[in-house]
Image 1 (cartoon, rainbow, N blue to C red):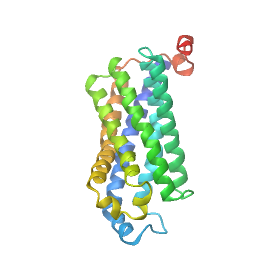
Image 2 (cartoon, rainbow, N blue to C red):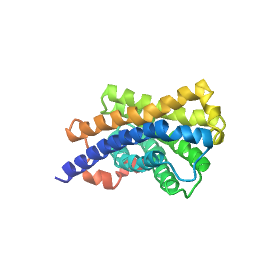
Image 3 (cartoon, rainbow, N blue to C red):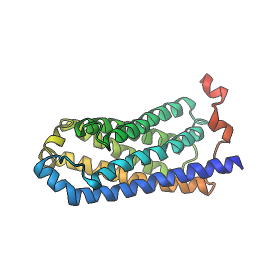
Image 4 (tube, one colour):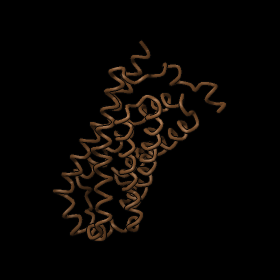
Length: 235
């Protein structure tokens, strides 16, 4: 009974993470269509844009719902490679918790947009790397091959976003968006990163959640989620 509860909890966490991600993407499209043009022309407004803020807030819940999924996948993968599974979990948790903290500070504007832009991209770099590692490990364990390759592709696309921002000068494009708009390489990497995180990740998370809920992925016992095995600690 307890194991069924954990499976249900992890499965719905994955699905909710994907669903909130899609909702955030809708807010992002509305921001670009209705609010971004004025931002580009007149600079950052004194009052935070509604749809942009809703998109920023969605990151908090996407990352929070990721955490149980990351823990469960670590337990599933560590039978194949305990050390690398633990490394991937640490990388993922850093990215997820950092995303939650950064966005929780940015939504009420306790930090500036330039600071948030750099910090969030660093956090996304960790999440993208986690996606690559956890799916590569999962492919050798129990994840369906197609889903694992989708996750790896999503991880690569997410990494493209912070790489593009760093390559174009960090927060400089926030002060002058025309720098980014006139750079085709940046626009490609930005689009790939946004689509990878907003659409690719959502598909991956929802499909993964369905696998957990339908019992097609093996789930460790509840005790193994609460404390590590001694064997894993000795590796």
